[in-house]
Length: 147
Image (cartoon, rainbow, N blue to C red; front, side):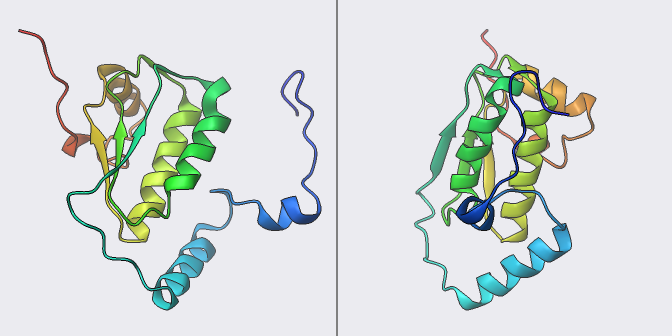
């Protein structure tokens, strides 16, 4: 059932062939990534270099599509990726699911993903849904507390 005002249309032609999404059979995707990783030489990243992804204050369902594109652009980044989440005040389940898939795909490819001071709102939402370990939020930099 389409969302009100947004009819769902099937992708056709080049869009369907080139559509990169996180959906699909996880085993098949992992096998494809593994085969690609074996044939594609990885550039050696300077450990001091980090790709940073700033996250907005509201990660609602309305922002899920833009967040998906942003994460998709960084999923194959050879450098460590740091998700800057200190400003997040509200997070929707869809955003948490995207983060889980992003972290899973990067972990499967042997790439590092970090959290920079995840907000209490993000930590609470992840804990409520049992996603703390999937997102590796327990290892994240602690939220700074004003004295």
